[in-house]
Image (cartoon, rainbow, N blue to C red; front, side, top):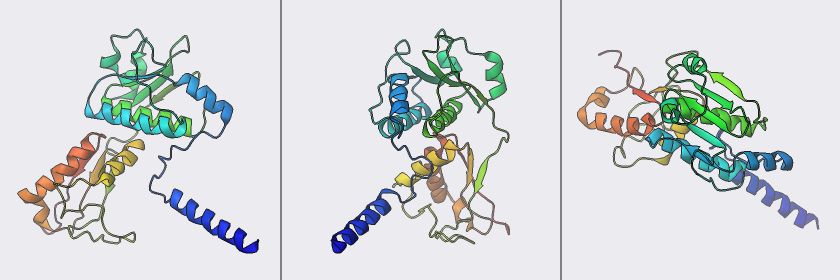
Length: 258
C-alpha cells in the first residue's frame, strides 16, 4: 500500500508539473470553479459579436475562442449584433447599432483606451474604443474580470493609458546571447527568420498586448550593426508583421559606437 501511495504521489506531481509550466503566464483561461458563477457567465455570454474584420479584430476573436473554451468550457458562439449578449468593436463599426455610446467617455479613453458598459436594459455588454487595438485591450480587461470572477452587471469602465510609449527593452544580441540575461537564449531566432515564424512570437505579442505594452526594442546598444542591413531588416519586418496586429511597434537601437 505504501508503495502504491508513493507511486500515485509521484504521478500526481509529474502531472501537475506537466499541466503548469508557466508558459501561459497570466493568460490562464482555467474553468471557472464556482458552479453558480459559471452558469451565470454562460447565460450572459452565450452569444457574441465582433464588429469588423481587421487582423486585430480577428486576433480578439481568437482570444475569445481560447477564453470561452477554457473559462466557460464551451465553444465561442459568434452571431449577429442583434442576437449577441457581448458586442465588441470600434466606435465607427458600432455606430450603426443603437447602443448609445457615451461620446465623452470615448474621448476620455483616447486613441488606445477603451470603454466597457452594459446597455440600459442590462441585456448586452459592450466593449468599444476609437481603435481596434483599444478594442483588443478592452477584451483583455474583460477577460481579467472573468478570470477574477467579477460580476458583469452594472459595468461602467473607462480606461486610458497613462503613458504613451509603453516599451519592453531587450538587451539581446544577434547570436541570441542576452547581456545580463539569466534565462537562456534570446527569443528572437534570427537564423530562421523571416521564413519561419515561431508561435512564441504571437504568444509574446498576446501577453504584452494584454497588459498594454505597445512597443518592443529588439536589440541592445552593443548589438551588431548587421541588424540594419537589408537582409536583417526583412527579418525585423517579419517580427513587426506579427506584433503590429497586437498594437506593438518594433524599435531597433543604433549601436552606441556608430
